[in-house]
Amino acid sequence: MSRLTLRQVRKSFKQTEVLRGIDLEIAPGELIVFVGPSGCGKSTLLRCIAGLEEITGGDIALGDRSLAGVAPSRRGMAMVFQSYALYPHMDVRGNMAFGLKLMGLSSDEVEARIAEAARMLQLTPLLDRKPRELSGGQRQRVAIGRALVRQPEVFLLDEPLSNLDAALRSEVRLEIAKLHETIGGTTIYVTHDQVEAMTLATRIVVMRDGRIEQVGTPRELFETPANTFVGTFIGSPR
Ligand code: ADP
Ligand code: MG
Image (tube, rainbow, N blue to C red):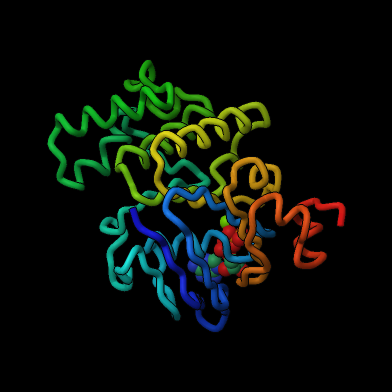
């Protein structure tokens, strides 16, 4: 397992600089949570790490290997999007199998991985259903399962709870924490919700306007926020 290193990462869309020099090292096995107000660049950063956007400055490396020019499918990462993005005409099994077939795995291996992920996410009885026959929470679990079966070294989650109601939100949040412990990889989790951040994170990264304001454990941020922006955002009394 490798350390993920971001060095002076920049991203501009035309004239607008959205990421303004992000420096960060993420240790293997961390569950690191990026928080910050809407529009601060969280999704863009995640997409740059996944290789879905090309960075316009700096470097992203996994271990000793720079990811510059490495296609998304070859980065050892899998991303879960805010809006599930399931294939409506495929059943749950098909949705989970899709990416794996592209990876060139045998059907036996595909079946084995789907069975394992379905068991972990309590989706086994639902494998033959279409997305429209599932609840919001079940759909989100399928989206997580679809990423999980790729056995990524780095798991990227972009506001995975935002379409769920409050009860389901805590259920799926617990499931994500459990999965992270079980698979033991690196998880990068984006949210604008400080409760999610405080309960899940090994470390929290607070972003504002394309920059990092502060990085620390939930406790460090709560007890010694670097400034009022961080303090207010984290809900610290200081
Ligand atoms: P967050 O996820 O923190 O809400 P985003 O990363 O989605 O923020 O967006 C950060 C900024 O980048 C926003 O101002 C957004 O409008 C802009 N942005 C994101 N994607 C694009 C794009 N493809 N083209 C132009 N601007 C974009
Ligand atoms: Mg976003």
